[in-house]
Length: 128
Image (cartoon, rainbow, N blue to C red; front, side):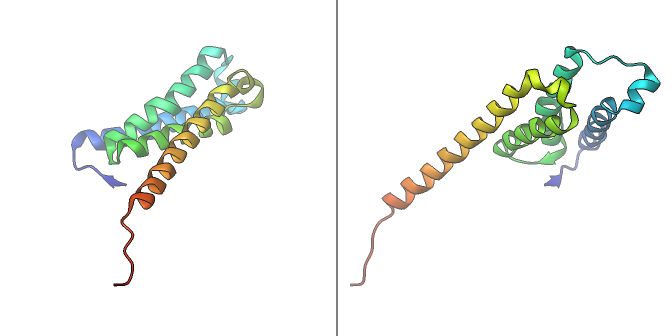
């Protein structure tokens, strides 16, 4: 990943850091007690949107990555959300993680199929 040479890319990196830090701090019990935060389902959905959509878009704005890599960042965001969100809050949303990993597996299988098809269609040349 190469950082883009624009002013907005530096802001995108800063915002990406803030998004990740705020989501990490949100689920720390000491922070919840200090700020008297009661987590609700809207907060959990917001974290999923931050990790699966917001963070990959900020990565795309800040770094030179392909659109296919952004799909990988979206799946990685769902997996990261799985580790950030405590188990008691995550159980109703497990299907999102499985759907994301399943989509990535289908994408990987499609790429392997294309490689196999190219190898099958490659001209066979033997010794003359």
